[in-house]
Structure formats: structure tokens, C-alpha cells
Image (tube, rainbow, N blue to C red; front, side, top):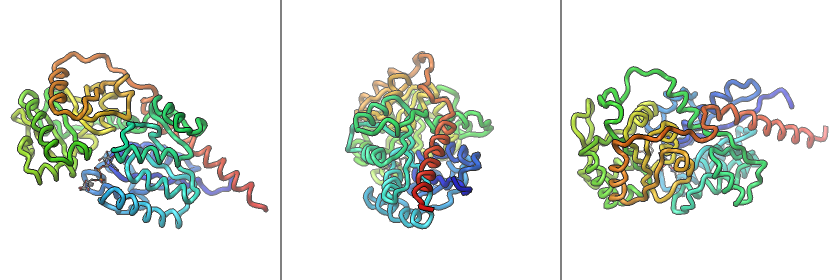
Length: 387
Ligand code: UD1
């Protein structure tokens, strides 16, 4: 190998990428042989959807921000590819690392693969088997393109083997998102959103909703929120709303939610508020009686925290959160969600179990594999040079 450092380019685009890439960047930065490069596609761009995560996760500012912004799926994906393609032509890294299943993940993986730059996929092999979700297509395609596949749970290995992915490319490393969570739990904080809301542990529930299947149809969304509002008469429900969800609630004038305007929660109701920061949201989840969500990451975080989670979807690509964790998949039926919620609240919780390798040390397992792979590629290239 020559004297120059290995250039590893990691991609973030949307909110759930941040907590996966932050611990990896921190680990890469410790390694003198590596030059870590961070690219933000700009898929998420609001302060509360992006910058606040950089701040709280102590992530360096991106070296490049492609500023793509929102758009239809195909337009957004194409625009990320166009802009990332230009970047990669001028700054050829030795490896591109993508995480999760968002449009930025597949767009950057495809560009890198086309440019013969090796791709590593963090959180590979998860499958919901529901191709109506854009994320499912993003996962399948990214795994197909990847040279290194890092998995968080056993099920991923079965899916990748079924799809004919060579097992020597696949590494069970644990969960980078849990690395961030473990680090966050160690950060002492005096003030939090929960302290402003004056919510005592296990006296409230948390709701998040952002999947198109749950929020794009105002009738379905209204029925869901009406059901949750019935639960909220007994237990206040804190609802930090994703911008797309908030916009639909506003446009449809849905009345089940109460808009929070600051200060303590003084009434049991369904309280809608702006997206919470990473640390505020973890703190809210950690002390909640119940979490209801259609997110992927929240299913894993509640499992780690030992907090009951009802997943408002027909499937999960994270089955370990059901088999070993606190998650139950309830489908997309408002009445069923309400019944299940009433079944959960006020009950004794089983002892907490944490899935294998969700120990806060995934980044330390990934970096040597990335480095080793880059070094072998560079050696191979050097052998090809005739003199
Ligand atoms: C994306 C991911 C989804 C992930 C979610 C987490 C894809 C296909 N979807 O969905 O897997 O669970 O992020 O949040 O990549 N918006 C803002 N400000 C922002 C970002 C978005 O107002 O900073 C609004 C825009 O109106 C935008 C809409 O939210 O059109 C949707 O954003 P987009 O990034 O397209 O998808 P998400 O629903 O956030």
C-alpha cells in the first residue's frame, strides 16, 4: 500500500441515517490510515430533521452537501444520483458507505457501483416483503449492489442467502443505531422536552406517524388520530409530527389533535408538536408507558430501552424486535391499535432482553472490515500497474 490514506465516503440523507453514520464517522476519525469524508445529500434539510442531529450526535459538518431537497421519489432519487455522480467523478473515494433504506441510500449506491467504487451497506438484509414500500425496493437494490453487507440481526442472513448474495460479503456486526443510543444515554442532560412538559415516567404515551400508507389518505389518518385521541383521554399522548404528517393534518383540518404551544402538559389529550430532537425523543421514549409508531428505527430503540412498542403497520422488516424485544405488529386498523394499547398500559413489563451484538460497539467491528477490504482492493490495483 502507498502512503496516502484510505478515503472512505459515508452518506447521510434523511433523519434515520444520522444516528447510524455518526458513530461510524467517530470511529473512522480515530484511524490515522483513513480519511473519512461525509456527504449529506440534503434529502432532509429542516433544522429539526437534520442539523439538530449533527449537533447532538457530535457529528462533523458534512464535507459536501448536495442540497437535493424534497420531491417525488423518482425525481429525488434521480437528482441525488445526478449530483452525487458529479461529486464522485471529481473526488473518487476508495469506498462508499450507505446506511438503511432511504432514497439517498440506493441513489448513492448505484452511482458508486456504476463508477466501480466498492459499496458498503449498513443495515443490510432487512426485508418487509412489502414492495409497496419504497424502502423495500431501496433495500433490495442496495444489497444487490453492495460489496460489503453489514447486518443487525439474524433474519438478514437468511434473506441475503435466499437472494443469492455470497455469504463472504455479509458480516453480522450489530446495530450502529444502538451505538448512538448507548452513547446518548451516557450524556447527562439537565433540561429536556420531557422536563418542559413536566411528564413523570410512565404517565404518557408517544406516537409517531409518517409512512405514506398511514398519512397520505386524510380519512385513514383521521380515523387513526380519533382512535389515539380516545386513548389520550386516559393517558396523554405526545405526538412529535413529521413535517409531511403535520402538513396533511393542517390541510385536512383534523381536529383530534391539540397543538402544543409550549409549557407543561396539563390535560390528557393527543398533543401534536414539532419533530423532537434526537436526545429529547430518546428521553421521551425511555420513560413512556407505551410507544406507537410506523417507523423502523423506533421499533429497535424501544426494544433496546425495554419499552412496549405497537407498530402500526402490516409487517416489520425487523423481526428480532418482536421475537426478542418489546415490539408488536398491530396492522393498520385504528380499532385494533386502540385495543392493543389498552391491553398494554398499566401492565407489568417482562424482563428486558437485548438482541445479540446490540451493545454499542458495532462501529468498532465495522471499521476493520472496511479498512481490510479497501487495502486488499488497493493492493490488487497496485499489482495491475505494470511498473
Ligand atoms: C424518508 C424515508 C423514510 C424514513 C423517513 C424518516 C425514503 C423513501 N423515505 O421519508 O424511509 O423513514 O425519511 O423521516 O427515503 N420534509 C420537510 N422537511 C424536511 C424533510 C422533509 O418538510 O427536512 C417534508 C417535505 O414536504 C417532503 C416530505 O416531508 O416532501 C417527505 O420527505 P422525504 O424525504 O421525501 O420522505 P420522508 O417521508 O421523510
